[in-house]
Image (cartoon, rainbow, N blue to C red; front, side, top):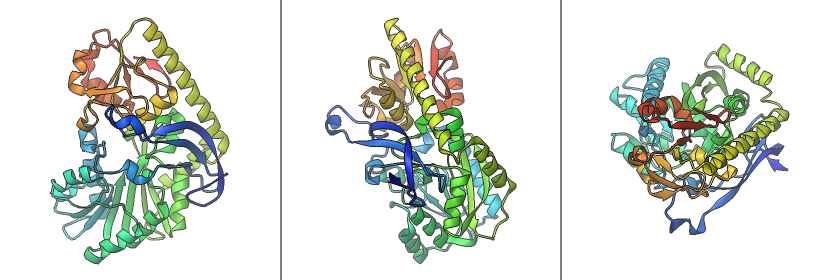
Length: 405
């Protein structure tokens, strides 16, 4: 039996993806000779209701000077983070005397909105290449991992924070107690800690299993976040669903007893219990659904190959690493993946070794079918490519089930 990272209770895995590579380890032929893999299993803790990876690679293997994800490559995310910043400013009545900290600021896509309004801010970002881009936007960045000791060091040179923010980062961090201790240390008495991550309820309902990869050590719910906050004399005061990343939740946490707890929290916890997110049986059904998608997609790709159809993929996402490796999708089923991120281009995908080509070449490729790995940006992508795909070409999607569009 394995021990829960949050409450130290014993729990059992409910899905085993086998050995997986690092999701963002796109590499040249020469670099893949000693490809690192780890056993990727997911478990549910019946005590604190946290869903988590049983084992996670060392953090330096995932977040480093060649980190492959830049938030600002999506126009939709630019707008999303602008609205996020505005809502925080309004909620906390921020001004030139305020101070905002972001844990995992990436390339500064969120914090730049505070800089524009002359609100002091600090980014914490361990991946040096993306941190550099944020610094070029005039943002002060510490290139380290956030934890309680760092929060204490920040206090030596900065004031306490009116808001501590994070987006698609908390779920990456196994040492959650040091994070919450750091937040409690750094947060003003009436401050808020607001973070958003892929939402467990959506993942179970949609079978969006590819949200599970090396970086995502936790899949949060209001039940588990509420339990975790209470362990640190903090409390969950609001929840707001987001459509980002195929369905996310924004959690607002404050010092206990300082802010009024929204009815949104009460309703969501009630809804989660009805969904069975506090029961192991719900997760066993999730595993069955994954395997149905696996069989359906492999059968479709095999049939298309036998019919002489050309299939390529769109979006060399972190999520695609789980799909290609767990399903066994090889370059003979999907010829290549087109992607807009320069650091991934002209490399091979982790584990499956499917060539990743520059997006500029997509329209010259003349595919019959395009497998959409970046399904969480489907609306934006399908609109962008509608004229090209209208010419008797088809999309293949697989969340919540396999479908040809």
